[in-house]
Amino acid sequence: MATAPRPWLYNTFFKKNYMMLGVVFAGAFGFEMWYNSVMDKIWETNNRGRLWKDIRHKYVTANDDGDDDE
Amino acid sequence: MAPLSTATRALARSAATNLKPTTTAVRAVSTTPTLRDSAAGSSYQSPFKGSSPGANVPDFSKYMSKGSSNRNQLISYFMVGTMGAISAAGAKSTITEFLKNMSASADVLAMAKVEVDLATIPEGKNVIIKWRGKPVFVRHRTQAEIDEANSINVSSLRDPQADEDRVQKPEWLVMLGVCTHLGCVPIGEAGDYGGWFCPCHGSHYDISGRIRKGPAPLNLEIPQYEFPEENTLVIG
Image 1 (cartoon, rainbow over the protein chains, first blue to last red):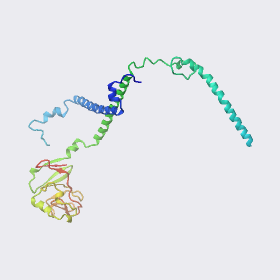
Image 2: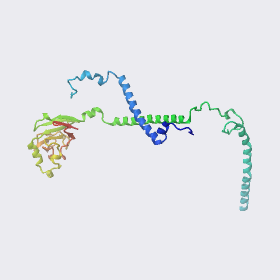
Image 3: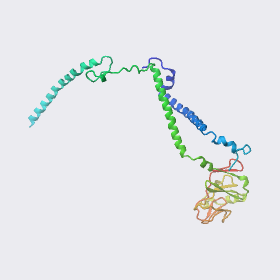
Image 4: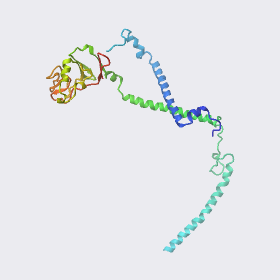
């Protein structure tokens, strides 16, 4: 089938099934982190001005020190 | 009867053996030449006789990949792997979101712990705190009360428990203010033993919250608590 030497990408990632599985799971981990952060960013842009971090300065002043119990 | 049946059986057998070669001969004659005709260009041999437009194999060379087989293999494995990674991430997040749904929400977790400033409780006084919808008694015991709680013969009690098993710091007694009989709230600094007294059915608890007299079967329950700093108590 393959007469030419296989590229290093194939040899490192896909040649062995366990290597491919590892690459797939590592990729899934990275992809999930990336996807979550992107989606969070989109959601926060859509709700800008309505989040607690945007309106916090109106309610928590510096002398309160965030130590408000009730 | 017997000779007749054997004769017919032999006849049928001979007929069958005679028939077999002739039929194969007929098949060979009818099919082979037509196949030879149509199978001119490709290795594929059409099972249909004669030349019909459906019997011609189209030319697929236009759709064949021009790249090397290595490259194609790499691309297809990459696609499979990407698809697998995306579906693994999706499956993982589906499961975790379902499990997150079952865990306690933030408002429940916020109510789960109560912090008490012990510096405001003078010696020999009770404080009742609401914790998870239940009253919690906190008593700052005097040394005399601690000695009294320790002087009792544990084996004589209904629910034998030493005082040091019920407190972390002997001067602070923390326990749930729910009578173990039927769930009333006992009254502090009352009863025959200087501890708590349940007005509903007359259970007497001593200064360590142990049942001494009355219908209750068990000592007052001790919640989970800790002293993260001197003079602070966290229940829960």
